[in-house]
Image (cartoon, rainbow, N blue to C red):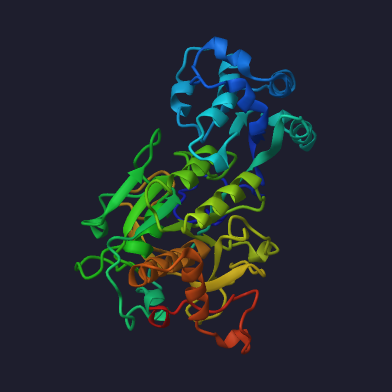
Amino acid sequence: MIKQDWMGMRGALTPPKKRLKFIPGKMILRIRETAVRPCLGSASLKIQASEARLLPETLARPLEYLRNNAGLKDVVPIFSARRMNILRSAVSGVNRAKISMLSSVADSVSEQLAGISVASLDPKKVTPKLINQIGASSGVEFAEPMPARWLAAVKADPKQNLQWGLRAINWFEADLPDASQIRVAVLDTGIDKNHPDFKGLGLVYHHDGLKAQDIVGHGTHVAGIIAARANNGIGIAGVADCQLCVWKIFPDAPAYGDFYVDGERYLQALNAVVDEQVKIVNLSLGGTASSTTEEILFRRLDEKGIVVVAAMGNEYRDGSPTEYPAAYPNVFAVGSIAENRKRSDFSNTGKHIQMVAPGSNILSTVPMRSSAYRDETEYVSWSGTSMATPHVAGAAALIAAKYPGMSAQEIKKRLRETAKKLPAMNKRDQTSSYGCGLLDLKKAL
């Protein structure tokens, strides 16, 4: 999360006093497949105005209600294989919205995701009452506001450490396997592909429609903790010599006083990792609202054998709220410790925490060029559960490499069972501050 005292902002960004719970003007809805299938017939759906008439009244009425009462701008079938063709089509906005809803079922890339779309509305008119009214429509399975997600990093002094985190997790003592065939996904602010510490790294970068530049630097920092090249005589060493698949899911400029995730890109990326044959997903982000759509996606990733690792959040001093996606059942939640092996003072606590990893004053890579929102270049120390999470993601990649037959559940179990018990845990097996304990690579491998 880009915290309120986030580093290197040059005063260009005035942080909000209170973060958003939901993204204004965005609503996720899932229509009932049974309401649409009988209308589609056996022929392929055509992207033309006449096809819009196929949408049944049980769905046409909610759309009309949104146009008349909530300033409906568009409907995007985010998991449709023909999404871009529909968005570029010459049909009217009214018909495009109807075709989008049909396509969300007819052209869904997965049966599990059929019927899900995102509606863009007038932010002032998206109320709980409106959400409930749409959700109560007979053709709609559920409707929910788009949850806000932000990054999890706070200010730190770059001179305070030289990768103390690797020592804390017994990286130097561990028998590290070759993880060059394991793919780890990083869904974040992007990456500087030209950073010298990524030279030779197997890297796939998705930033369609956005600048390639990692303006904030958070994604490059996270990526360096996971996979900066070791023993190359440059900079730092990452936890694993794995491949990276990076999705830029944050916009190129702040909105509502902060950098919030682009909800549509984020949900699409959570689906796309399956096709990229990713084994581990790193999510150094979070927010206080849960989402049925998001939970469906994480359940799907778990069924596909993909380990999802997410940050607990940095709001302990603001009441330690429960944050998502870390709190979902299929997600491995990670908290942060400082160099004294005690919980970092910002790190959220909760029953869902799985383990802790180094997160205070973590030295890693940042883009070689500065930006309007970041002065630092090359290397810098930042803090946050954002920094703890990639330590665990890298460790999961190493376990997957050493034990290729392990399922996602077995990898997570291995991490928990080999965690080091810390003095602050008072000999308990698990606590709400430390989970099962501190990541221990030597034991895990």
